[in-house]
Length: 264
Ligand SMILES: NC(=O)c1ccc[n+]([C@@H]2O[C@H](COP(=O)([O-])OP(=O)(O)OC[C@H]3O[C@@H](n4cnc5c(N)ncnc54)[C@H](O)[C@@H]3O)[C@@H](O)[C@H]2O)c1
Image 1 (tube, rainbow, N blue to C red):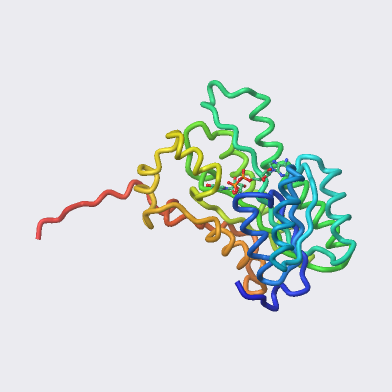
Image 2 (image 1 turned 135 degrees about the horizontal axis):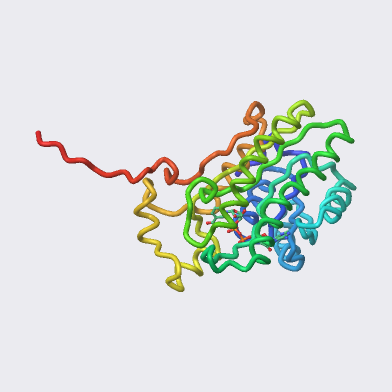
């Protein structure tokens, strides 16, 4: 990606940016010209990702954050503001704790909702408060999932957290539009990240059945999710807010699509 006016002189915080989709979002935004703070609960991995970016000549910093802690969210936004006020936020933090609902440990359910949904609100609120205090607008993108609208086995907690993300995205867009803050979500089906590749390699995830369900016939590359995130953060998306954009190869459009053969 080439640097563009949308991103030169801008500062993006990418939470959950150390690996997977967040890492690709960090790289894409930095290549587009933004300064990027790679923030993650795994501080060492965030530092390694930022160091790799800096070695490639990109503007990157790192920070350790637990998004489930509202105080830590406020501190991250404050400490990132020293050089350039951040006005772009991507939230990719998530916990995958899959279990059949009948067996799910209540503590695990709570953790998934706390990180995936409550944390998304805490970081959004800290970020928006800083923008309002600075008197500038900004843009936020959360990563939702097709699990928010399409049930997947053993993912009741995860899907519930993502359905909350979709509702929160609409609510915050309405409340914060008057401040010039746009908030949207990107909703992928399965993406070839480390976690998905490991699940496929172990046989836990039946890739053939999954790709048969996707009209484009394959999983997404993380860069395809990052491209949509970059678009929604760019000035080209300046009148888009409160939307959940499916980036799913047609997964959510497919309702048991059965071919009916007609006699000629
Ligand atoms: N991979 C997929 O197929 C897929 C599909 C649909 C949606 N998503 C969503 O995309 C986003 C990224 O997914 P991924 O597969 O790259 O995930 P991942 O597990 O590879 O990366 C998530 C990152 O979040 C960090 N994190 C976890 N808890 C945190 C916390 N409390 N505070 C801060 N950081 C924390 C992790 O350390 C990790 O670096 C998630 O929201 C996920 O739900 C992924």
